[in-house]
Image (cartoon, rainbow, N blue to C red; front, side, top):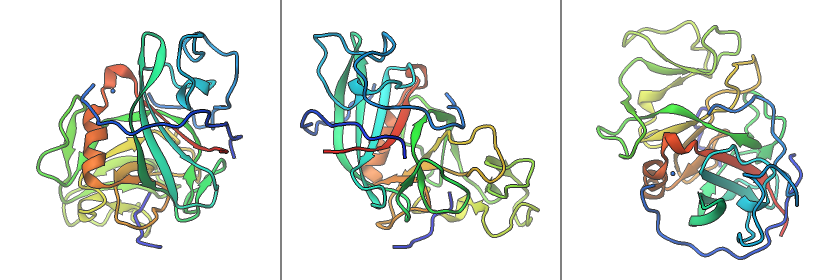
Length: 257
């Protein structure tokens, strides 16, 4: 989703207070439909904590994607442009807190369970991540994900009627692609926000108008146009922690206290 420096799934209860810890290197493309992430007392064996598991945000999710790494992005106000980001690892069948709470910025219009192209909201739901990290830094954040350094001609197509809608496209440097309708992003020019970023796998089927370019990227100290952003150092730690074989997922949700 294009960075512009401008200034619902049902909620679940946060049952415990969570303490911040340091990240350590360890951590799927989701359905286009927003998945049910309501707190439940009975769910799949992987999603339901045993009696010995700690009760926390991650353990109360009905669906956490089936992997062993999870990122939660939560806010108590659907219109807020701030959210709390935390990371979790599944250890011996239980979700354990890894890091956070971290202050994240989200869409200029808050969160929405019905996100559409250009509406300024961050889509709510459960999503995987794309297979590649991108960025304008000469070196990526490190870790297990492959990294592509952006160069002139690297775009994210955000024109709903384009055949390559919601995907990375490279064209010869200096070429003005047909999908550049004022919404598509010249990624190599966004050096602050896109120093390094992960693609949140929202709308992988590329349904026209459903939304595109939802990233986990570096903050610009402003709301996003629909992405999730973190301060650069914290972002790089999270990206370095993520491991493809652990099938990391992200849950974006409004919660009650």
